[in-house]
Image 1 (cartoon, rainbow, N blue to C red):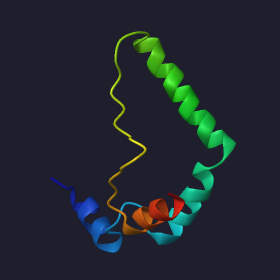
Image 2 (image 1 turned 135 degrees about the vertical axis):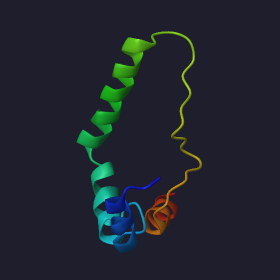
Image 3 (image 1 turned 120 degrees about the vertical axis):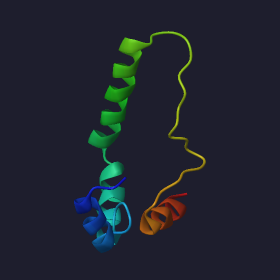
Length: 78
């Protein structure tokens, strides 16, 4: 159930990241510091689970996004 504030915000911004933000996010996600962030997350996960299996939910071949402009950027990047 959405809070009243979230309902209001959803009317103004129905997608997760509206268009101008998708261009910025796309540019930032390609930077070295952004990639290093993912490396740190991977190392952090290993401190909890050094052996066994890990399910990677963020697959590289297919994704889902509520933002049509993010989907368009992803298609262009592929």
